[in-house]
Image 1 (tube, rainbow, N blue to C red):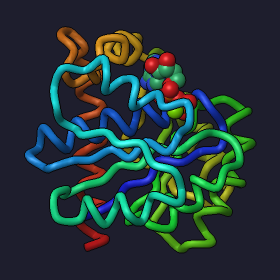
Image 2 (tube, helix red, strand yellow):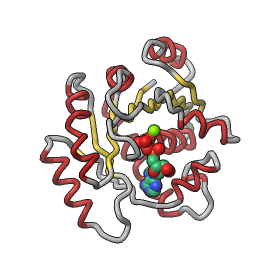
Image 3 (cartoon, rainbow, N blue to C red):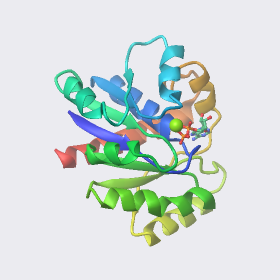
Image 4 (spheres, rainbow, N blue to C red):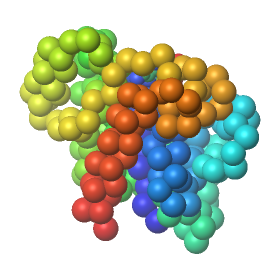
Length: 208
Ligand SMILES: Nc1ncnc2c1ncn2[C@@H]1O[C@H](COP(=O)(O)OP(=O)(O)O)[C@@H](O)[C@H]1O
Ligand SMILES: [Mg+2]
C-alpha cells in the first residue's frame, strides 16, 4: 500500500479536486483505492455522497484516528489518497508524515505561491518526495506556466511535468459526484488528468 498526501495551506487551489481525480484514475487503473478526508469541511466526503459508484471508498479521519485508519486499509487498499484542510492545521503534518509522495497543488496566482514555502517547509521536515502541481492554468496562454515553474524552482521545489488547466468540467463533474475522467465530453481535462496519473504512478514506483 502506498500513500499520496495532497497538502497546501491555501484553500481553493484544487486539493480536493486532485485527491478525487487521482483516486478515480487509480481505481480505473485497477487499484483498490481509499480516500482519507481529513478536512473538517468534508468536501470529498460530500462528493462521495453525491456519487453512485462505490470506488473509491472515502472515509473521514481526524489526526488521532489516522494511524488506525491506515492500519485498517493496509490489507485492502493498494493506494490511499489523503486530502488535507487548508490553513495551518495539525492534520497536514500528520498526513505528510505517512506519505510516500506529497503533491502541493497551486494555481499560477501570487497568493498560493506566497503560501507555498510554508507547506514546503512542513514537507522538508519529513524528507518526503514532494512536487508542486500547477492547477487552473489559463488554457490559452503558456507564459504563466513558465513563470510559475520558475517561481516554484526558485523556492528549491520541483513542479510536476503535467499542468492542469482551468476547465469548467472539474466543477460540473464535482456537482454530479464524478471526476472529469467520468464526465462525457470533458476530453481535454480528462486527458490532462490521465497524463498526471501516469506520471504520479511512475513517481510512486520510484518510492517502492
Ligand atoms: N483545473 C480546474 N479548473 C477549473 N476549476 C477547478 C479546477 N480545479 C479545481 N477547480 C474548482 O475550484 C474549486 C476549488 O477546488 P478544491 O479542489 O475544492 O480546492 P481546495 O480543496 O484546495 O480548497 C472547486 O469548485 C473546484 O471544482
Ligand atoms: Mg478541499
